[in-house]
Image (cartoon, rainbow, N blue to C red; front, side, top):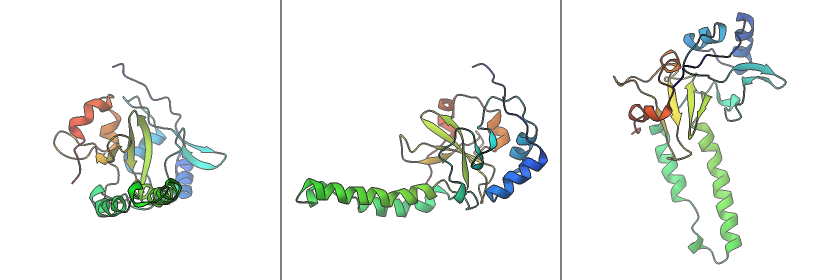
Length: 191
């Protein structure tokens, strides 16, 4: 695969500080350095920019800015809640008419949205890698690590791990092989 160059424009120190204040976080050192001095790498993470609605990442409609300061949760921390929600999913056989079932299912689905949103608290959707999305954790104990949001196909969020087992940092990920399919061996299931 051809090596990409980063097309990002550097931010000034004042802009980085303004973004940190606006977002309520302090960026990890390697990402901060990237914002100040973008260098060629194998990745093209979304650029951080100030737009009409404030600071955010270009092309990112998924990051919940209100949850950025909330520590990123380890996937094992919400397994019980997921199981409880799944157990409450309405079954059509339990309803006399289709309309009542559909209303109950929509209400259940709406109740599932907030817990799903919390699963990516403290993380930025930094790059789309169909069918996965790469998350960059900016707060909590997993700060400065990279994760794959694979919920589109497998209902899980897993760390991108180095062959030695450590979770990849932003700096390591930035120059890691660009094909997300090659990460399959390094994105284990989380238990």
